[in-house]
Length: 451
Image 1 (spheres, rainbow, N blue to C red):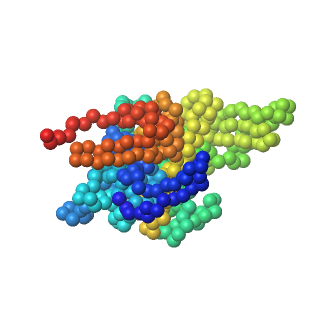
Image 2: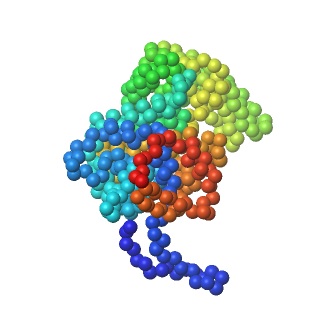
Image 3: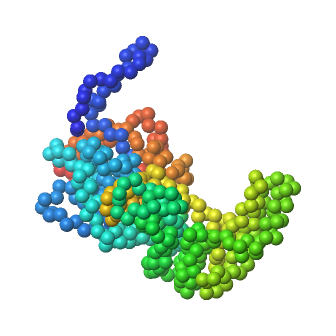
């Protein structure tokens, strides 16, 4: 372990007793819950798949840190809240982390990778490899279903990723009033399919059509009869995308920016809800549908309009375009509005998994960082979906999962035959931890033990 100053630290007295602390407790970890990440990854096989997707140009005879261990160290570190490569300088001596990454120490030397080693991994990834990693996420998504789903709703959304240095491909974006990147995410419920970093000097819907085509092709290879729905805000309402969907049997429900023609079509409804608001001071809404074609469209399409007047005397008209059948109110409230949950999933990745830590100089390295954060999200979302269903944390965000399941103090004792992790007796979520560990259990052949 790393040497440190053994001088006790003194605090204010407690009930006439001196209160001191030191760092002589031995091999104690603060991340015992990382073992759950290891078990979750073994169930979905994500890190093994990433290792196969990423070529390793190093001389096998000179490798001390296998690529798989590097990926596990980085992905699990992000999941546990270690956003910076420099954090791994301390983690590399931790026997619990050596176990979690399947790279236990030998000969008394620190076996996990140093920050420079992890940095070299980030900067040797090529563009073709990024595509292979993205394909791995889609395959992991497909394997997360035990049977063919009847319907898949693919949520597309873009967000800003502010940069503060002089990184490649940084541009100023007027809407966000900052220098930033403009990553594109595709989710299906809480499952992630795509995390694609883009420069901000583009249309926010750029490459949506290409990504949708690739996804639909692969998903229909796996499930020929699955019903696929594209869902997005008005930034993704593009006539070419809708034309392709109509030709290929894909449904869509997309927001539409308001214009004078659309507003004219619901003027009567807007006047009525405003009058109702004047009477009782409450918010009122009603729905209307009609056919409409913008100047660039090749055909009339179904528009669903929400005419609403909010408390506070504010008009709030909204429009969506869709080729789905059904009641207008239900399509808007029960289908389209549910896309808001995707924004929470993006926030989880950016706020808690550091997907916006794109501080590398090279753009490709920053894209790889976004994918590492996405991989950490996939592992944690698997725990939430497969191991926390029906518990008090069934809908917890990743920050809450980290606090209650991963950041656990424990004493680690290593011998020739086993590694014992003794977690704190005062840990308040012991029953929940046992449930999660049991649900993530992977049946494996017993290791051979010498007599």
